[in-house]
Image 1 (cartoon, one colour):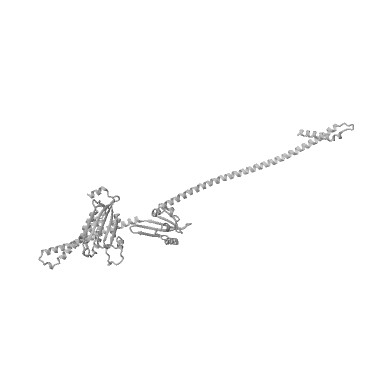
Image 2: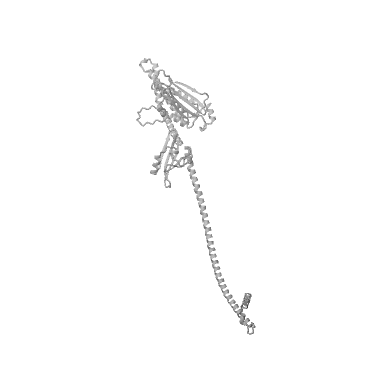
Length: 493
């Protein structure tokens, strides 16, 4: 700084000299009074130095003031930085907490979503695996649910059925739109039973969906065919057991007085032969006819006793042709028509195939089937009133694949179309007891024995003028009958 001031003074002095200011300090003789110049210069220098010192002092104070303000600003900035840092730290902490809470909520949402998906899959699996036909409908009668049971019964995949009108997707369904509308209007459950004898039995339940955003109905169709058939078999078995007990009781009750009557008739006939009595005076022929009829009645009673005693809980192997021959021998003794036609008067043609295997069956029940067919044939043959008519029954037994086929044909009066439709149906009559009903026209019990007891088939073909043929199929497969092949070989011997 001092060098700058000294330099500044020299410049001023040179400027003063050049400007002629130094002329003031010249004496009269023309010489310059340098003392004055020096004093003036010193004074100027002192003033300049004082001004400089004052300026430096003032500058220093200004600097100190500025430094103080800068310090305050710096402190303020530092405070603001600390506050901002604290705020940022708090924000970071809150953000971390929020992230942690958000991660927890996301984890809970994921867990909830997984549980919902698992529950939905579980419910869908339950619905699809139900052994029922389940159909969901909305108020527009469009399908919203179609489970696996519906797919198997209808053959329509769920992706094809969903969204369609029920009766357009599955026109043969027996549920009516009026029934669906009734459930929706009344908001009550509707239970229906639908069945066709020998084919199917369904329990149908229709109930409304309540407390749902989208209302509708659910249709449950339960195939109870096997259960109904099992119940019917138990009922029929109980009936057969009761029938056997009743037959045995009636046979014993009738047989005792019948034997006494026949013995008395034989005694009377013996006395007539021993005594010397004119034949015309006693009804000997009537007594002999009464004895023959009594013998027929005894044969019927014997058949009832055999039926009651031979019914067993298990099937056994037997020769169907042997059962038929035994039924024919019984028919010769017991079957006769009011028209005078006796079964013994009918020509019977037997056409049995060679080497027929034995069949698992209930012998007594199968015998009753053939007796019923022979009685039906005798009745139809007795209705033919033609002089040149020769009553004939043809019996054919053949083996095809794993079944035994039996045909019983006759050339009597055939069945009408209506009779063919109802001959295997049970008879229900609510009229008075004295109403006339010919039991020989119905073969429902025989049909039950063949189809339900022996798991076979039975059908009829007929022509009014030519006659009637009954067709029967009996299974030869021993599996499922509980009869080992060794026992079959022993029975056949």
